[in-house]
Length: 236
Image (cartoon, rainbow, N blue to C red; front, side, top):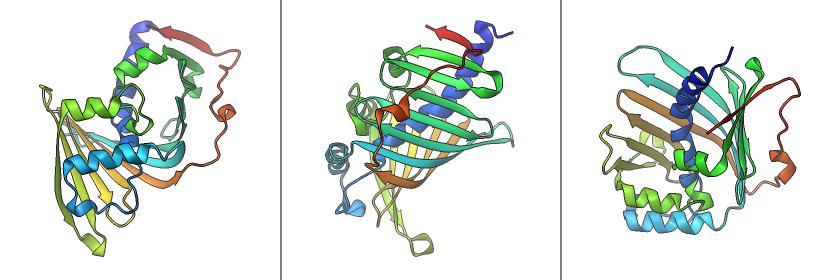
């Protein structure tokens, strides 16, 4: 039997995985003429705002690893993401467990087929809890919030395996938990390749693959109707 307490536990764990993931959208596409190695922080932020205006939709695959310094266990997940302005989003985790998060901007549905369970959240409340949501879509001033709440710094690029990369580090100004993010950008393609998210003893590493800008997505791609026999919970 699914009590509200059990549901909240599952939501808390899922949130630990998805919050850093949402932040990835902010860095998915920096213009091709960007000389990342010599950018200042202000120039990078300006480029992010500029690139967001050129993107109406996107899709990509992701691989995510979560681990704690207190354990040798590594939790791995992978899946696909599609989104379309203004507020259409679908995250489909395919392994280790099939799970779907989908919204058209009013209600967020979180569906776990194995339990035949659907959790519904109000869009605005969900957005408030997940403020890392795509700066690239300019929703709820997420990029401005990141600029305000985090100290940004550009690190020296590396030339590992003859492939130049540039890293961007963000540190939360007020977080007692020491929230920090390290992003790796491919200098040639100028797109995000990897993000490392640090919180307390946890580290979540997310890698993007096969990023496609402005695919022909339709609103029907984000439609969701709970199965007739599914247990549906409204979470406040």
